[in-house]
Length: 115
Length: 112
Figure 1 (cartoon, rainbow over the protein chains, first blue to last red):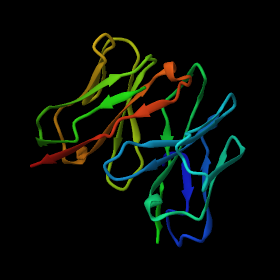
Figure 2 (figure 1 turned 90 degrees about the vertical axis):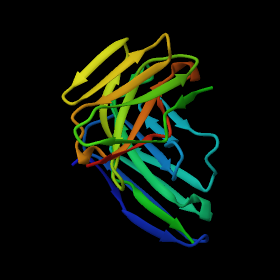
Figure 3 (figure 1 turned 120 degrees about the vertical axis):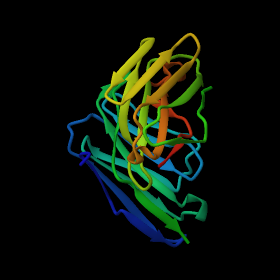
């Protein structure tokens, strides 16, 4: 049990669908992250929310939009995705600030398939 | 920019010792993390180095040389369950943030 949960675990969607991924952390951390993990590629940071900063990877398409209503919950809203967006989407949390983030705790991920 | 290099794949024998290297070129440095990720599972934290030298934690040890931009993860008394991907991540404040950047990971296969 890592303390970070994600739903759904698996998602299949068409290119015209709208869906949302949900992440919840029960560790009292103050930073949450979305990563994309594709085969043979490094973990790609998509978004970060913390008390002191919000970071967006400029290469992430606008069809992905994050929402962080509080320090325990993080969403990733998906719309008009492309087949190349099929990947494992990992949520993580950590404690820290702009002067240093501690180790990250990852959720189990959502395996997304776009048809 | 940031560049983090790890071997793509390594194989080793049960009971042996294996060393997984990670080299990095970054504009700054504020710590290096190692994570383990079993197939189909989430990455889990293994170790953290910010000063030069060796950090030992049971069968796993991690070494850092900041002047060489080099780290390694040493796994002793290998077990079959150690078959996994090992991810190196570097924290580089030179990019304006203290969020770690991950390498591609090294897939370790342990065979009997």
